[in-house]
Length: 555
Ligand code: SF4
Image (cartoon, rainbow, N blue to C red; front, side):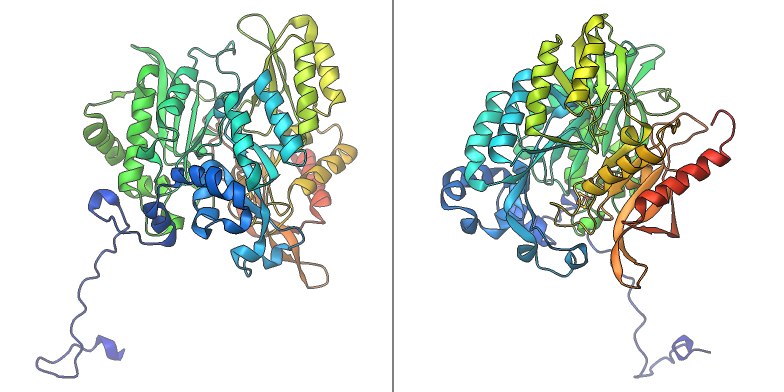
C-alpha cells in the first residue's frame, strides 16, 4: 500500500492537512472581472491601444528610423497596422526556437494589406503594383486570406504607403493583431449565377463600422470572419462564418457557424442553428465578437482563440449568451445549408448572371510581383474588365469579361505567368510565407512549392484528379495544413546522414466544405509519415501514383 494512502490519525502532528479543493485558475475573462493582464501581450494592449501606434509611426519612427522604435510597439502594436518584422536572411530553421526575437529579425517589415472580400478595382491594382515596385523590392504575395502581402518595407516609407493605399480605398488597419482581421468573402459575390443573395453589403458594413474601432481593438487573440453565399471560402476554419441558406418561410439569409480555427489545436466551426437575414449580419457579427472580447480566455496565448470558449461552453450556451446578453432578442432557428461535393475555386471560365464571364487564373503558390500586377492591370483593361478578386486559395479572378474576349484574355494571362487552365498541381498547391521571411518558420515553403509543382507537372502532367497540397513552414498552419489532401507541416526531420534537416510531417485526407458522406475533417497525422524537404517531390509523386493505381471507379 502506498504510504500516502494511509489515513491520518486524528491528532497526529505529522499528518498533512487534507488538500483543499484546487481553485479554478482565472482565464483572464473580462466579463468575470479579470481585468489585470496575465501575460506580456495583454499588458502591451492594456498599456496603450495598439491603434495609437499609427501616430507614433508617422510622427516619430518614420523620421528617426528603425532603431528608435519602442520594442513593445515593434513586436506588438505594429501588427495592428499590418506590420511584422521580417526574418533576417540566412538564419536556418534549426535556430528559430533558440534565438531571441531581435536576433531573428531584419530591419524591414512584412506589410499586409487587407482586401476584404478580395475585391480590387483597376486603380487599387495599379496602386498595389506601384507600391510593390517602389517600396517592396517587387514582392507581392496573394495570401490564403485574400490579402496582399509585401516584404522589404521600411518604416520610413510607411506614411507615403498609407497615403497611396488610402487614396484608393485600401487599408492596412487591423490586418494583423488581436482584432478583427480581413473578412473573407466569396470571390464571386454579386456576379455568380448560383448566388441568391449578395453578402457584400453586410461585409462592407462590418468593415465600415468595426475595423479600426477601439471597441474591438483589444480582443484576446485574432478574430477571423467569412461571409459568403457559396461554399467558396474555408468557412469552417473561421471564428465566425455566415454561409448562405434559404429559409422555407423567410427566404435567403445566412447560417451562422462559430469557433473554427486551425493552428496547433485545430477545430472546425460549429453551427449555431440560427438563420440571420442580410440586414442583421453586422449586429450578429458584433455580438459574437463582443462575447469573444468579454468572455474569451486571456491567460494563455495558445488557449485564447474563440474555439476554446466554444468548445467549453457548447453551442447551446453560446447561442443563449449571444441572444440574451448581446442582442436582447431570440434568433430564428434555421435550416442547415446544402453543401457541395467539394469547395469551389472558380478556376477557368464561368458565366456571370449578367451574361458576361469571369476567368479564374492561378499564379504558382500565390506568388506574384509588382511588375506582374501592373501588367495584369493593363491586360484586364484591354479585355474589357475593370476589376479582379483574390481568392482564399491564393488565386485570382478577372470579372466582367465579354464572352468573345475570354480566350484572348486567357492567352494574355498566360503570357504574364497566370494560368486559367492550370495543371491539377498548380491549381491545388498553396504555400505559407515560410522561412524566407517568417520569423516563426522552420522550413522554406514558397520556393519548395514552386519546385514541387514544376516537378509534378513534368512527371505527372495528365494527373486528372482534384488534389490539394498545402505547404506550411511550421505547426501554425497558416496555409491550413490539416484540411488538404496532402497537408505538410514544416519541422526538422532526420536526414539520410543522421543529421537534422528541413522536412515535413504529412497529414493525409483532410477537407473542408463537403457534402454529407464526404464530411469535412482533418487529415490523418501519422507519426511515421515524414519526408525531408529535399525528398518532397518524389514523395508526393509516389503518393499520387499509388492513388492512381488504387482508386475506385468514379473516385
Ligand atoms: Fe510562418 Fe508558420 Fe505561418 Fe508559415 S505556418 S507563415 S512559417 S507562422
